[in-house]
Image (cartoon, rainbow, N blue to C red):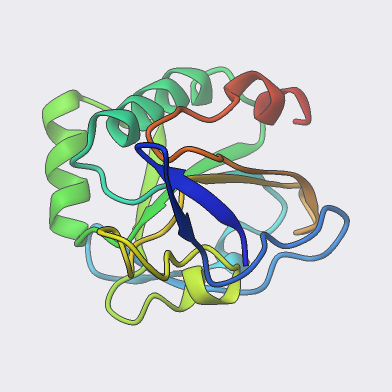
Length: 165
């Protein structure tokens, strides 16, 4: 279990992020058109997984904007923005913001992606949502970088994530 903070108050996750050098577990996440995305759908691509509690918070929205800006310059790379938000909220946000370089994926209704990868917040007011984290994966599905952001209100280290691509 990871210990993180929300506004300086300690909260916990269901586990630890997967280790660098291991293969990312397959997943089934819901796209904004309600179809299912799996890891296999991105075979042969590098992935940046931008994981966060909710698109309707300032820091989460900022991370989606920042990665959308960066994604336009990335070769053979997809940026997946993953939260427990309903796909409709993800689609509304990106549509209103004109963001089309990232792929929004929802871990609703079960949250199995968050549970499998140790991301589910287990206590506090955001219990059941995902912690803020980054996972970078190479073309073979091997994890090359992870970051568990220690304070949920803080943005991730974009430069460190992008540097491993």
